[in-house]
Length: 113
Length: 112
Image 1 (cartoon, chains in turn blue, cyan):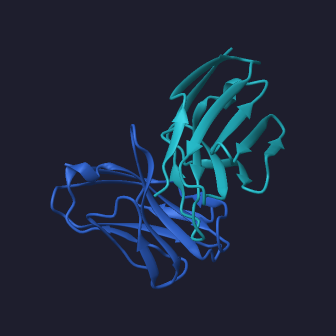
Image 2 (tube, one colour; image 1 turned 30 degrees about the vertical axis):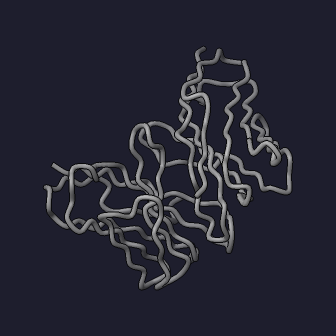
């Protein structure tokens, strides 16, 4: 699990500000994912990526932007933060093509005031 | 898209008893079904998974069963211990990207 890290672990920001959450993995996994976790909703997929420069939308992509210029990094940007984006954000990675085990990072708790 | 329903939402069991959590999925193309355990304030941890070509899989005190025809799968925990207390999530993966659709979770409380 030490192979996938997220930063910051905690963040408080104001409505309207841009925020970037970082995710870094050392396994050279091809696939990476961003989820948000809210009470009553479980884990919902925001964006995912199959390789560098290949990304696609998940279930709840509105208000978020991703990029993946390097295999090991998958940053998530909230372009103009809203209170509804207050959540715990988890990054995950997976090594193989197709359905494979996903390993989660420690999470970032984001509060938008 | 895929929809996963999970029951019950909360489960209280006596230490030593068994716990069963059930999930149903909607997309018959789903071929991978993992289960995650999440302790309070921690990340989800994969505890067991099953693929669509297998009906049952065991790992010590935990087992997962899959019924493709009925589109449901279950997690069984035997001889429960206090450290089994956590939230458990089922998930289904319907495509080659490995995207996961999660159930809403089950809070399991094991009382001594």
